[in-house]
Amino acid sequence: MRGANKDVRGLWPVALGAGMLLLAGCGVGGGDEAGTMQQASRQLAAPALQASPWPVWSGWDFPYNEPPLAAAPAVNFGVSQLLQSSTQTVFHGAHSLPAGSVQNYRLGLFVHHDVFYYQADASAEIRPDGSFSLTLPRSVGSADRAVLVLHPAGSNPLAGANCNAAGGWCSGQVNGTTKLSLPVDPATLTAYTAAYFPAPATSSNAQIAGLQRMMNTPLVTGGPHGAGRLIRSFHDMDSAFLYDQALAVIAFSLAGDQANADQIINAMAKLQGPSGAWVFAYTTDGADANPGVDMRIAGANAWFGMALNAYQKAFNSSKYLTMSTRLHDYLRGELVAITINGAPQSGLRFAPTNYAPGRSGIFALEHQLDAYASMHQFHALNGGSQYLAAATALRKMSESLWNGTRFLGGYDANTQTLNTSERYLDTYSWSVLALGNTGSLGQPFASALPAMCDYFSVNGKLDYPSRKVTGIVGFHDAIHNGVPPTPFAWSEGSLGAIMAMRQGAPGMQCAGNSSDQMLESLNYMVDKLGAMPYATQNANPDFTSSGSVAGTAWLYYANQGKNPYAHY
Image (cartoon, rainbow, N blue to C red; front, side, top):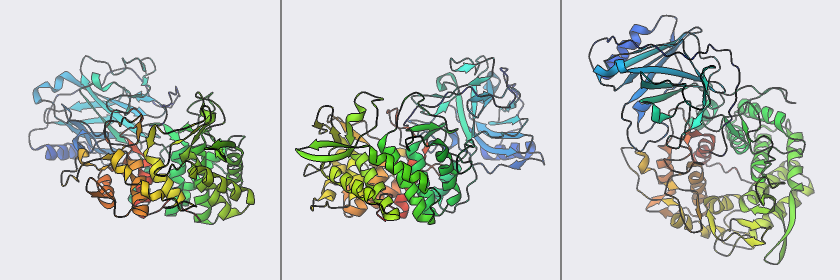
């Protein structure tokens, strides 16, 4: 979760209000839970309503719900079916409240556009037989998700400090336990569940379809190539990170989905800055997620360079060559002369400004690798000795960070020291993917890969057939000052590590698990919308368990054997 959500007080044309939904306590008879839900659906489905194509998941999907919970919720509560027409949306579902207590609870609906709008005119019925229905007297329009909340009769869903009771809306809050953007603190609720309204998916490939569904974002207009859309970085948030835009464009390009690649690049063309670069993060409407802060981070920009290269190669198109040239010229201009171990180097600085203390003096290995690949690819497609010279310098800089047994995380020109106290998973995996198994002087880069098992492996055999999240086998992200985090599986990083193992150490195993077994295990994490959660359950605020572009795109690369760093 690489940035804060935007808190926008937009004005969307929906009916708002602060009133409470009414509850009706009449039942429809006994019977098994599944049969009851089907019976309720038949009774309430008007002929004008059609079953929604939107996939739905809920508490009933535990433990495959988002997020992976530590334990089953005290009260199960979930949507089993959505029905819709142009004038009505109906949610059908089930609950596990005791039959004699349903009168003590109320059901509320929030629909999300830019913030969560409380739908006071929705009618709700909670039945003693374990079923419920909620009817909204309109279509959901351009909403991307809904959150249904089950709460005690005396509580008010709009009472939170993040809510505007008079306006009838709440800004999303990311709770430390769920890590989902929710309108109400889960601690004040009996239960909650989310229904997602993804964009249509047309691809037969599961990961590409998953990415297509995450294009349910506002139109970004006014760019030189026409209107477009950013892809949301996480299902339940409004963030659109530059890195994720790049990953999606690469995946769409490799898969031949030019329409969605065009959508993202068109939107990014509108947002390209005067320097030729982009900032680190946007919201899905194209606004800067960190206004007033110059966060032109080198690595993320280099990834978008790789994305523009992937598009140009896949579709043999120079449509976006002007914006790509501007970006690569910007990156060349960010190379700075430094000295490492007595040898002169030309390295890519982290950022052109100290938006955080010392940032402009940091030279991260990952950024050198990203820019090396981008420059090398761009030169292969378009020529230009200046780009080949930059690629050569970036490779030389990257190799200067090899200490004989592993790659170091980077160099700090502020203190003129190498980073020897931290280990990052990506410096092991991405170095092999970008530079190859051996260096220009025969350095055995792939020989460092087994250390990923020693420092980052989340141990455990495959947990068949239960598919428990605790059985996922992969890697976590980093070790700072020799202290590893509480282990969790980081999907994006794990998939990159698996690709590096396949390339550089095909016989390697971690805790008895081969790269193929790890990949099979990670595939179990995929949610019902076809997206890969960013991580299994963990206490790190930067690693959400929401379905993510990064996890989904890297799963596509791993499943298809496509290296985004590959030379052309």
